[in-house]
Image 1 (cartoon, rainbow, N blue to C red):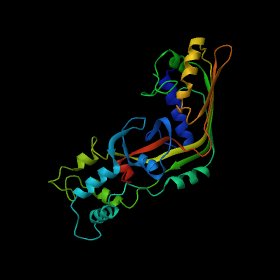
Image 2: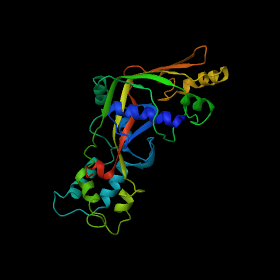
Image 3: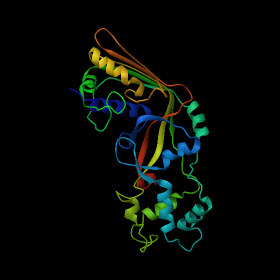
Length: 298
């Protein structure tokens, strides 16, 4: 009998395949999140250092701060074209400005408006996963309602009015060759042996920059419809209806972002419809790369 985690794994496997995201590096946003705050609100997503979960969650470390600390601690070469020397000059020129990336919010929304439509079905079971919510926002995945929903037959259709793989690069504050030089030379020049900032404290498993957000999958005009063959009684129906505004599976979009309707037939079979308006970019997932992969070294 499939569990809710198995249902979620099935959905992510099918969704990632449809949108071209690798299951080994893709992370899902829970809940799917409207992108607000203009350029800086968008770039904040790429400035976070994510953890290793299947769900994108920041570690508290920031790319710009960790990168700046590392570059400022390195010993530059005497050649003016030395990548560390150039990186130090770039950071000094950037000054106290907040970190930016090559593409901003207005460009992203323009690209999204011209991006292709994508749709896909979900019908069969898949291997288990963990740490996901249940049927509604922040609900447990292992309880009577979630378990009943996951164990029953389900038919779903899903479409995106526009779907964009958004992958900007850091602005001039960042120099990939300087970071690659540091990564490729653990314990030796350009690392400063008298500095507390080391290769391990930077790129190690518990370092400040072990992983990076490489892209975000952004959609608008999301349309989801699914019907469950689970037979929900009147109490369960009332519970589901009461929690629908907080956001239902699979994206958990609340009533400020999406229109959600829930209905039940005479046998208690549930049909859910979720739609979002045009022009509201919603981040669904992203790719998280290890430091060597981000630098193109692996």
